[in-house]
Image 1 (spheres, helix red, strand yellow):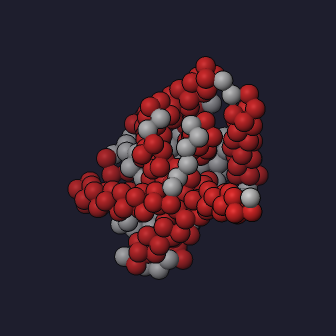
Image 2 (tube, one colour; image 1 turned 60 degrees about the horizontal axis):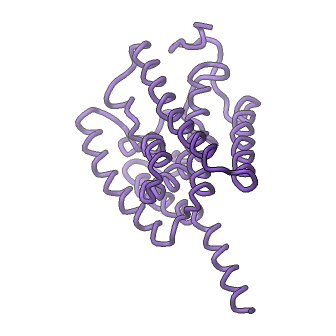
Image 3 (cartoon, helix red, strand yellow; image 1 turned 30 degrees about the horizontal axis):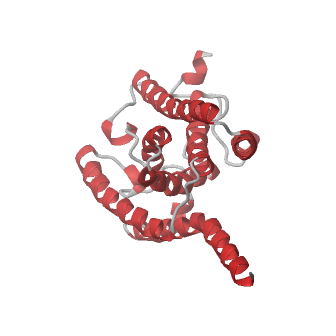
Length: 245
């Protein structure tokens, strides 16, 4: 069992779109389908509260476990280990949002969480294969981000508004300025604004630094629009039905 927690793991590397990758995606998808089905057909306030608090606790515990693992391996440092990437921020904000139901936090978790976590799940930034701890932690953490975003949408009856896109985009850019300063002070690369990730990703197609950062801005805004689009379509259908009446 101890070997699955090794930092220098000699038993293979993670392969994108491998069987274990697809199985991780399938498990996350099934969990979310089951939860959404339950919300639509069997939701009650007591169980809803239990699920929300359980998700919040799981978000925090898995983040703590990751930091403990890095400490035990001698790999923890300010420039790489804090939850300051968008997915990491979504973990912390998502835990708070699930408890207090704050709508402004929901907006951030929805766009940062879905946009960042789904991309990360499709192109994981990890080296460790199944069943290494880091593989399991990665899929649990990003799966929880997706679940928190979707569960709060269906449980709280929240939804992003069109203006939410630009509000979150503005906050993201302000956050990026703060992170740029933090990266400079602690030799970090949070948000990948100093250099590209070490593993292959879509960013490899976005040109050299600093131009790929500008492309990321555009891609981020487009992804916000895409994740808002189901609600825009729903609004359009409602308007059409009203006009017909």
